[in-house]
Length: 207
Image 1 (cartoon, rainbow, N blue to C red):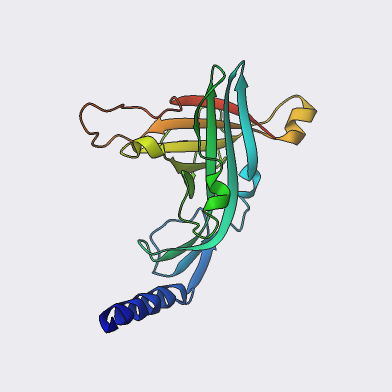
Image 2: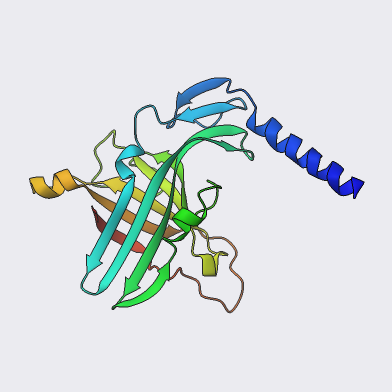
Protein backbone atom coordinates (compact mmCIF):
# COMPACT_ATOMS: atom_id res chain seq x y z
CA UNK A 1 0.00 0.00 0.00
CA UNK A 2 2.83 2.38 0.89
CA UNK A 3 4.54 1.54 -2.40
CA UNK A 4 1.40 2.40 -4.37
CA UNK A 5 1.01 5.68 -2.47
CA UNK A 6 4.66 6.56 -3.11
CA UNK A 7 4.32 5.85 -6.85
CA UNK A 8 1.14 7.94 -7.04
CA UNK A 9 2.82 10.90 -5.34
CA UNK A 10 5.86 10.54 -7.59
CA UNK A 11 3.74 10.49 -10.75
CA UNK A 12 1.76 13.53 -9.63
CA UNK A 13 4.96 15.41 -8.83
CA UNK A 14 6.45 14.52 -12.21
CA UNK A 15 3.29 15.66 -14.01
CA UNK A 16 3.15 18.94 -12.12
CA UNK A 17 6.83 19.57 -12.71
CA UNK A 18 6.35 19.15 -16.46
CA UNK A 19 3.36 21.48 -16.47
CA UNK A 20 5.17 24.03 -14.33
CA UNK A 21 8.14 24.48 -16.68
CA UNK A 22 8.67 28.14 -17.45
CA UNK A 23 8.27 29.26 -21.05
CA UNK A 24 11.69 30.56 -22.04
CA UNK A 25 10.82 32.07 -25.42
CA UNK A 26 7.74 32.82 -27.54
CA UNK A 27 8.07 32.51 -31.31
CA UNK A 28 5.53 32.47 -34.19
CA UNK A 29 3.92 29.10 -34.85
CA UNK A 30 5.45 28.93 -38.34
CA UNK A 31 9.02 29.25 -37.00
CA UNK A 32 11.58 26.47 -37.36
CA UNK A 33 11.06 23.77 -34.73
CA UNK A 34 14.80 23.76 -33.95
CA UNK A 35 14.52 25.80 -30.77
CA UNK A 36 15.62 25.40 -27.13
CA UNK A 37 13.40 23.37 -24.82
CA UNK A 38 10.31 25.12 -23.40
CA UNK A 39 9.86 27.40 -26.40
CA UNK A 40 6.24 28.40 -26.99
CA UNK A 41 5.21 28.25 -30.66
CA UNK A 42 2.35 30.73 -30.51
CA UNK A 43 -0.14 31.43 -33.28
CA UNK A 44 0.64 35.15 -33.26
CA UNK A 45 -0.51 35.55 -36.88
CA UNK A 46 -3.81 33.72 -36.28
CA UNK A 47 -3.10 31.08 -38.92
CA UNK A 48 -5.24 28.51 -37.10
CA UNK A 49 -8.22 30.71 -36.26
CA UNK A 50 -9.73 30.59 -39.75
CA UNK A 51 -10.09 26.81 -39.55
CA UNK A 52 -12.01 26.68 -36.27
CA UNK A 53 -15.61 25.50 -36.46
CA UNK A 54 -17.56 22.90 -38.44
CA UNK A 55 -16.95 22.29 -42.15
CA UNK A 56 -18.89 20.07 -44.53
CA UNK A 57 -18.39 18.44 -47.93
CA UNK A 58 -21.58 17.29 -49.65
CA UNK A 59 -21.96 15.29 -52.86
CA UNK A 60 -25.45 13.85 -53.16
CA UNK A 61 -25.97 11.44 -50.27
CA UNK A 62 -22.25 11.36 -49.46
CA UNK A 63 -20.91 13.85 -46.92
CA UNK A 64 -17.75 14.49 -44.91
CA UNK A 65 -17.96 16.75 -41.86
CA UNK A 66 -15.11 17.91 -39.63
CA UNK A 67 -15.16 20.06 -36.50
CA UNK A 68 -11.97 21.79 -35.37
CA UNK A 69 -11.15 23.78 -32.25
CA UNK A 70 -8.01 25.66 -31.28
CA UNK A 71 -6.01 24.68 -28.20
CA UNK A 72 -3.56 27.24 -26.84
CA UNK A 73 -0.27 26.72 -24.99
CA UNK A 74 -0.41 22.93 -25.17
CA UNK A 75 2.72 21.28 -23.74
CA UNK A 76 4.25 18.51 -25.85
CA UNK A 77 6.48 16.40 -23.61
CA UNK A 78 8.15 14.63 -26.56
CA UNK A 79 9.48 17.90 -28.00
CA UNK A 80 9.54 19.81 -24.66
CA UNK A 81 7.80 22.71 -26.38
CA UNK A 82 4.45 24.46 -26.07
CA UNK A 83 2.25 24.79 -29.13
CA UNK A 84 -0.99 26.39 -30.22
CA UNK A 85 -2.72 23.63 -32.18
CA UNK A 86 -5.94 22.39 -33.71
CA UNK A 87 -7.89 19.42 -32.42
CA UNK A 88 -10.86 17.85 -34.16
CA UNK A 89 -13.16 14.97 -35.00
CA UNK A 90 -15.17 13.98 -38.06
CA UNK A 91 -18.09 12.11 -39.61
CA UNK A 92 -18.21 10.37 -42.99
CA UNK A 93 -21.43 9.25 -44.67
CA UNK A 94 -21.30 7.35 -47.98
CA UNK A 95 -24.42 6.87 -50.08
CA UNK A 96 -26.58 7.66 -47.06
CA UNK A 97 -24.82 5.14 -44.78
CA UNK A 98 -22.74 6.39 -41.87
CA UNK A 99 -19.29 4.84 -42.19
CA UNK A 100 -17.59 6.55 -39.25
CA UNK A 101 -18.51 9.21 -36.71
CA UNK A 102 -16.02 10.40 -34.09
CA UNK A 103 -17.71 13.79 -33.49
CA UNK A 104 -19.08 12.73 -30.05
CA UNK A 105 -15.48 12.46 -28.84
CA UNK A 106 -15.16 16.25 -28.95
CA UNK A 107 -17.11 16.50 -25.70
CA UNK A 108 -15.90 13.20 -24.23
CA UNK A 109 -12.23 14.22 -24.40
CA UNK A 110 -12.39 17.79 -23.13
CA UNK A 111 -10.15 16.93 -20.18
CA UNK A 112 -7.33 15.71 -22.40
CA UNK A 113 -6.32 17.92 -25.34
CA UNK A 114 -3.99 15.23 -26.69
CA UNK A 115 -6.88 12.94 -27.57
CA UNK A 116 -8.47 13.43 -30.95
CA UNK A 117 -8.50 11.90 -34.39
CA UNK A 118 -7.47 15.13 -36.11
CA UNK A 119 -4.78 17.34 -34.62
CA UNK A 120 -1.55 19.29 -34.92
CA UNK A 121 -0.28 22.67 -36.04
CA UNK A 122 2.41 22.18 -38.69
CA UNK A 123 2.44 25.25 -40.96
CA UNK A 124 3.60 24.48 -44.52
CA UNK A 125 4.45 26.59 -47.58
CA UNK A 126 3.18 26.01 -51.10
CA UNK A 127 6.21 23.87 -52.09
CA UNK A 128 6.22 21.59 -49.04
CA UNK A 129 4.89 18.01 -48.81
CA UNK A 130 1.95 18.20 -51.26
CA UNK A 131 2.96 20.93 -53.71
CA UNK A 132 0.17 23.51 -54.06
CA UNK A 133 -0.11 24.78 -57.65
CA UNK A 134 -2.92 27.23 -56.90
CA UNK A 135 -1.37 28.77 -53.76
CA UNK A 136 -0.05 32.31 -53.76
CA UNK A 137 3.75 32.62 -53.20
CA UNK A 138 3.49 33.36 -49.47
CA UNK A 139 0.36 31.37 -48.70
CA UNK A 140 0.42 29.15 -45.62
CA UNK A 141 -1.43 25.87 -45.20
CA UNK A 142 -1.86 23.67 -42.13
CA UNK A 143 -0.86 19.99 -41.93
CA UNK A 144 -2.49 17.82 -39.25
CA UNK A 145 -2.54 14.11 -38.47
CA UNK A 146 -5.68 12.21 -39.46
CA UNK A 147 -6.52 9.03 -37.59
CA UNK A 148 -8.99 6.26 -38.36
CA UNK A 149 -9.51 4.70 -34.90
CA UNK A 150 -10.40 1.31 -36.42
CA UNK A 151 -7.21 1.39 -38.53
CA UNK A 152 -4.78 3.25 -36.32
CA UNK A 153 -1.81 1.44 -37.88
CA UNK A 154 -2.17 3.84 -40.85
CA UNK A 155 -0.16 7.08 -40.95
CA UNK A 156 -2.30 9.75 -42.55
CA UNK A 157 -2.21 13.53 -42.86
CA UNK A 158 -4.91 16.06 -43.57
CA UNK A 159 -3.94 19.37 -45.21
CA UNK A 160 -6.11 22.48 -44.85
CA UNK A 161 -6.13 25.34 -47.34
CA UNK A 162 -8.43 28.36 -47.41
CA UNK A 163 -10.10 29.14 -50.73
CA UNK A 164 -11.38 32.35 -52.24
CA UNK A 165 -14.74 32.33 -53.99
CA UNK A 166 -16.28 34.71 -56.55
CA UNK A 167 -19.60 34.32 -54.77
CA UNK A 168 -19.50 36.90 -51.92
CA UNK A 169 -21.98 34.90 -49.84
CA UNK A 170 -19.78 31.78 -49.90
CA UNK A 171 -16.67 33.91 -49.38
CA UNK A 172 -18.16 35.37 -46.23
CA UNK A 173 -19.35 31.95 -45.07
CA UNK A 174 -15.92 30.35 -45.55
CA UNK A 175 -14.57 27.71 -47.91
CA UNK A 176 -11.59 25.38 -47.55
CA UNK A 177 -9.93 22.55 -49.42
CA UNK A 178 -9.18 19.49 -47.30
CA UNK A 179 -6.75 16.90 -48.65
CA UNK A 180 -6.29 13.48 -47.01
CA UNK A 181 -3.12 11.59 -47.90
CA UNK A 182 -1.07 8.70 -46.59
CA UNK A 183 2.44 9.02 -45.12
CA UNK A 184 3.51 5.45 -45.78
CA UNK A 185 5.08 3.25 -43.13
CA UNK A 186 4.73 -0.39 -42.10
CA UNK A 187 1.26 -1.89 -42.50
CA UNK A 188 0.41 -5.31 -41.03
CA UNK A 189 -0.46 -8.08 -43.51
CA UNK A 190 -4.06 -8.88 -44.48
CA UNK A 191 -5.57 -5.60 -43.28
CA UNK A 192 -7.17 -2.64 -45.10
CA UNK A 193 -4.53 -0.27 -46.44
CA UNK A 194 -6.63 2.91 -46.66
CA UNK A 195 -8.74 4.80 -44.11
CA UNK A 196 -12.52 4.59 -44.24
CA UNK A 197 -12.64 8.17 -45.48
CA UNK A 198 -11.13 7.91 -49.00
CA UNK A 199 -7.88 9.70 -49.80
CA UNK A 200 -8.29 12.80 -51.94
CA UNK A 201 -9.57 16.37 -51.96
CA UNK A 202 -12.77 17.67 -50.38
CA UNK A 203 -14.13 21.18 -50.86
CA UNK A 204 -15.88 22.16 -47.64
CA UNK A 205 -18.13 25.02 -46.60
CA UNK A 206 -18.34 26.52 -43.11
CA UNK A 207 -21.52 25.46 -41.31
